[in-house]
Image (cartoon, rainbow, N blue to C red; front, top):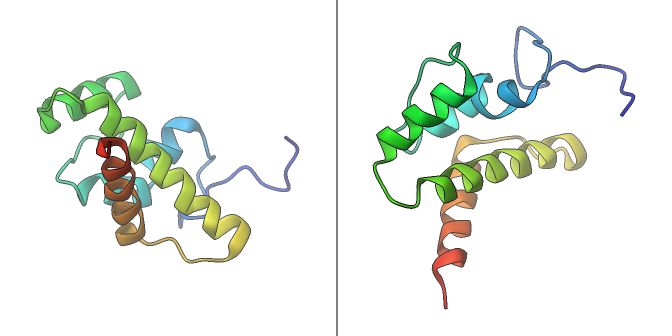
Length: 106
């Protein structure tokens, strides 16, 4: 996709937006993870970060949490980009728990 800029819109430093940055290294993403009690060294390789998240979560459904958190971050960031809705960590957290509840419903 050709864009005017490939830098992260949520970072003061305007870092290039990669998958790792978007979901793990961006201060916004890190704050989202922290809101559920997960902190990590963002400069590590993504696989090591995911292993750390697995250990921190200590639940058998850790992959579902990882998928749903990244989906929640993505959705809230898209609301900012396309709908001018300010991205809030609380909004990501609400979306995450809403998605988890949906997955658990019969």
